[in-house]
Image (cartoon, rainbow, N blue to C red; front, side, top):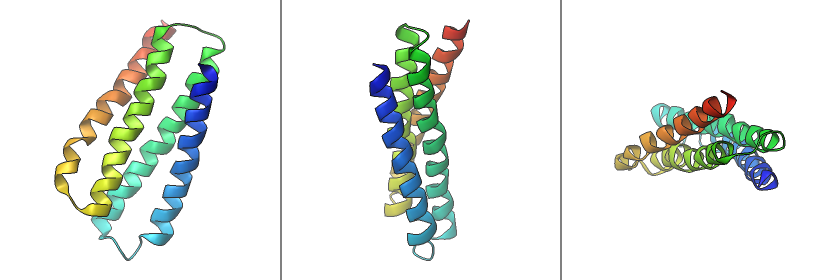
Amino acid sequence: MDKTFLLIGAVAGFLAVALGAFGAHGLRGRLSPEMLVVFETGVRYHVYHALAVVLVALIMGRMDGWLIQTAGWAFTLGILLFSGSLYALALTGVTTLGAITPLGGVAFLIGWACLIVAAI
């Protein structure tokens, strides 16, 4: 499972950098300043949590348990829901997509909470 999370984290990190470059170079002037900030927020949390998934992969080599595995899946789900909804909102302007964003935030919180409990 640690290789699975290493792969997910590496792919997520790659995509975050690619999307960040796309936002910085391809979207400037095409999106309103407000929507560009929304896109950049998605990228920022995408990068943070791609690194968190890689951290989970590294921790799995030292600690085993369902909490570590749950953290990895929660971070992955959070990237998809939180960052994905912000990307979609910025690119389409469909404001109802913003309703999905908090679900991704909750997934991020669950991931961090699982790591806290596993550490205790």
